[in-house]
Length: 553
Image (tube, rainbow, N blue to C red; front, side, top):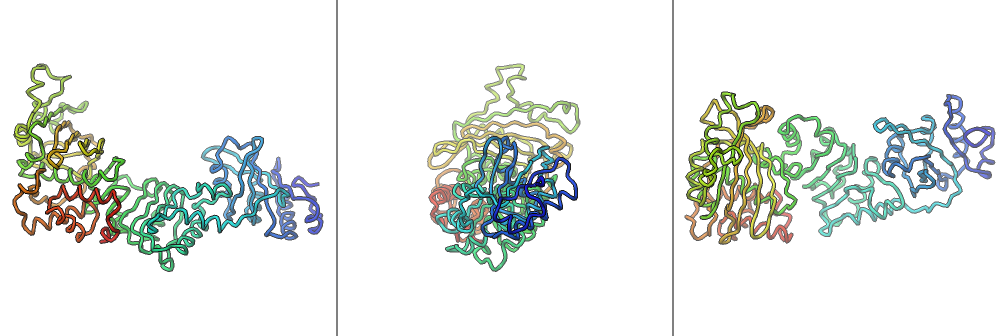
């Protein structure tokens, strides 16, 4: 008997009636032994009913590896795909079943039933029992997939969550159905399109190791042609894949964790290329884009989505005033008992550089570790909005680079908010000064129906060489005079002109991603108080009472 379980001379009729065909690896593979196995396999399958022919795969000594690791690598090593069924482990081996596997099994035979995983230096050694007599439940995979897809549709019927689809509990209990296999992805998308109650506006494909999406979103799949949100984090997508879906009117796109992101050394080049393909894009990788197509906040770490509109509005408003000739407007952002302190120091090796002069900041630095006279600690702690404003007005004229900002909302409570922000700025009237780095910690307290700054701690130093190269790569338009938006009640405001109202509508639309018609409605409901409008928006956003058309532009 041959090493693969049957003599080649056995007739097809007798093979069907006698025993399964067993395939093993050769100690020393030869062309002859490989051809003999393939010929025997073909004869065996020709004499069998393919609809009832089961293949049993045994991966020897493999229980140190996860189910997904084993199955993905086996599937990745053959061009013709199959669906692994009923995976289990037994005595150190991993075992599963499959049907319609002639081409894949022949491919494994050509690899001597050994699959190499170079990255992990792993050898997966296979034994295959063709025509196994084991009892395998023969469920309809298409029905299981259809049920899994229907479970992933949101109650609103407009959002479809296919993230980590292969881990769907009821589907995974029977088979391994990864969307990284194009035919599987295509089948799932067509299934969702068929069962859709209303066109989808949001699709989540995250964490599926998808490489190809060409052809999945054809025009005949009408229920996917109105997608506004596509989440595709942690896949294996290339730029060519993205170019295949540029017909989708996306407003929100998530791509981080894909190889295409590694093609770019500079974030701005990545943003430019993606927005070139999707001109209507408002949010990329969770970060809002400004009207100039750049990140409003480059990195946003807040876990509470409802905090983001407030953060964006606060930073935009605060630094537009700080960089303008109207710093006196900052008076209304601080309380009468607010405190402010500044610390500053040189980076190692920079103290002797001509353009690294920090005298304007060092003289006011409240760095207790470096103060020779500790009695100054109280003098350098500024108290009250008027004292703080006088100090801030003495600062050199500044220009901040919003694309350099990183921000986090550490606490977002009804009574108080804690914000941390870092970034770069320069002194436009000082041609010899280097670009500065800053860190700012704000504590805001809810007072008289608005949030006011209770504590403000600032740190300033010179930026690193790497930061200097990336700073101010995007040319920003000259900021208009900031609106006088004090954090006080509406009744004390000077009546707004039509031009100011238009600017406020544009601003709230940019911050919330609502269209301008709904932005205007929101402002009108609170008598054009921008901060109250944002609170109003957050409340209804959390209650999911804002209709989807409010975000269509």
